[in-house]
Length: 100
Length: 157
Image (tube, rainbow over all chains, first blue to last red; front, top):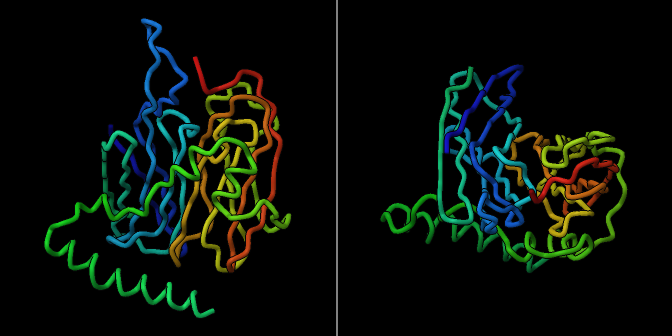
């Protein structure tokens, strides 16, 4: 359940691209044995700059597997950008990078 | 007006007082402070029902100030790239709806000041669908939509 983040500053704006590793099961899919796989999806994503929340996203099962996310907010090179998520089964993940 | 001010006041008090103290005392895990995910919005089936749950209305003004980019034809409904950018002032929130999905609300993005009101994502479409970007700015809702033709649906399998 890793998170890969790329954060680059240009003209005072930080462009953030993140790839979140997650199955995002819709509840409509079946496994090899034909059993329904229960819903398993990221519900909340937070993007923070130096600890301050800049964007909060809430998602449904209809966001694709291994979600991609692109955001932009004010900031400078050297700032810390943190992306964290929580899914419907209570699992969480978090990752930080220094803005280039 | 009075109730609005009261709400702002309560919000401020709670943020500075109760919640802050609880965090300081280690009573709340940080993740519990994330704004709540709403089953009322996300588990609602049907376009107008979902829109009502999010915005309290389905009557949104069409706006040319919202850029919504989506493919005209998606060969794979499991991965449809969507980008939205709102070019109005004081944008608080962007919501993405897919009319043909049972659960029509796909995502909501809430922006703090300093964040550009734009977001890119990849979504699933079960069938050919109108994709709607709704934007809340200065307390009012605006929308724009694009039709995406889906060759192979993307929710089951």
